[in-house]
Length: 250
Image (cartoon, rainbow, N blue to C red; front, side):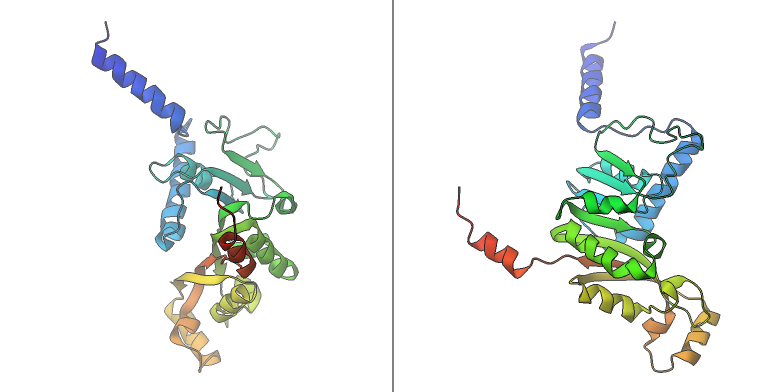
């Protein structure tokens, strides 16, 4: 017969699952996918130090949504809600059946398959926007509109973590073939963002030598940067601050 302590522990565990539900992998393949998603978050985004707890998060190019699931279920920094958008719809099987999540316990995760869905969200809906590969999301002629939409979807003080490639003298699709680190930063600032932090991935030695030959007067960081994760802050607009200062107390 269970002791009082065993009954109490079982009750506490049930209460914890009710309040702080977790995503349980159904098989080793799912567990491996969870580890990959968690590694992506902890290596690419988390070092930039954004606030996750109680945040409404939009993940663009969300893949299978497991990064969001991790942020929704991890204690103590649980997000409030997560919305993932990815045209590749990798959470569906070829026959249309749902591959993952078959059972989404929190009820706080949404997954959508069309970037046009960005136009359906209300303005100032999110505290944090993630994009693990921005160039794969927007063609060049839609880039500025896409960044402007990200800005509009963020609440005042909200942040965007955007991973981008930087153009190489050797060619390639990174940075749309011409956007350098400085170009990315200028574009973000021109659209109204403040730069909170920049985390860089460096080129190898041969690529740096090629960049130096083409960009002899650029800074070392400019030539050496192959990829960046930008932490962009959506500042308070003057009219928003004015509205706050003049709000009547309840």
